[in-house]
Length: 187
Image 1 (cartoon, rainbow, N blue to C red):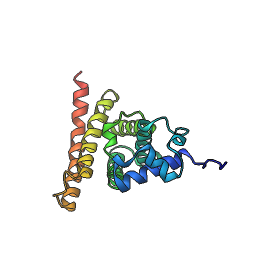
Image 2 (cartoon, one colour):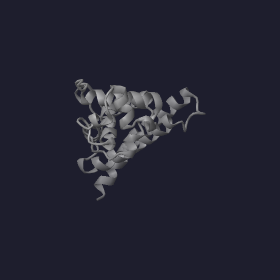
Image 3 (cartoon, rainbow, N blue to C red):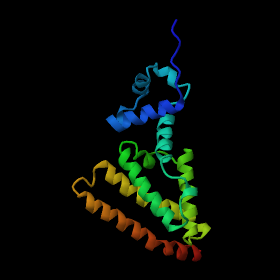
């Protein structure tokens, strides 16, 4: 009797991510991932609980491509770098990226990114009591633009114009940060 192939959770995630990058998210099935690894679909359940769990792990993998906070400056510069890095990640994984808007932010990477954004907002002068609201708004603005870009909504817009639009979006967010402070102090 042949021994079952040994593989890791990381290999499952990498196979699923490759599959999504090559063929789209709909192609990511337990059977397809198992076939890539040369195992039976049931063998995957030693590493993932379900397809939903696998999708959460894909979100985690994509977010792990972002630089560590310790390597970044504080405040607005950190937010800009994170936004640009997130845009690069979205471009590398356009099929997976919309999951950031579709899945609950329960994966460790999602929670860490949210905390990093809150900390950067606080360093920009946004009060702690407005940081959660600020994170929701900033994340929604950035993720909305990036999801639109990766989904093809901006396909008719030349790349240099999309780049300029992204820079304008960042500037509008930066200029809007004082509003969070004013709204917080009115409570």
